[in-house]
Image 1 (cartoon, rainbow, N blue to C red):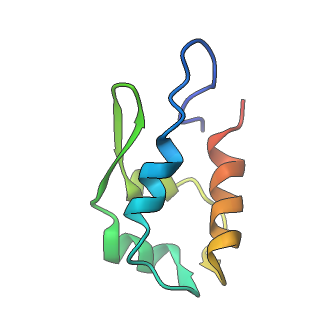
Image 2: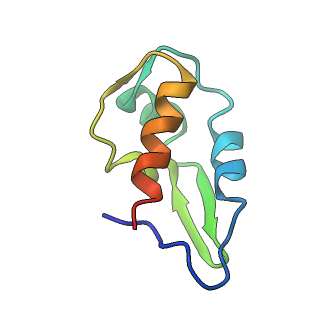
Image 3: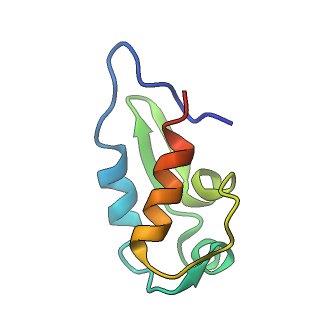
Length: 82
């Protein structure tokens, strides 16, 4: 599943907005804990593309994240598939 492909006029602030939404999350954490805590938060993922945190992390295969680095590596690997 792709959220968007980077082509044409890319929107490069998506991870800035995602990081701001993730600010209240402490690690270690799980996908379910993230959804329970901030899943309904809306994140701008493109010029006219807004998604909830729950929608953004739903495709991630891993369920537990020991640190923010582990979470963001999984997120980047999923979002920037092309």
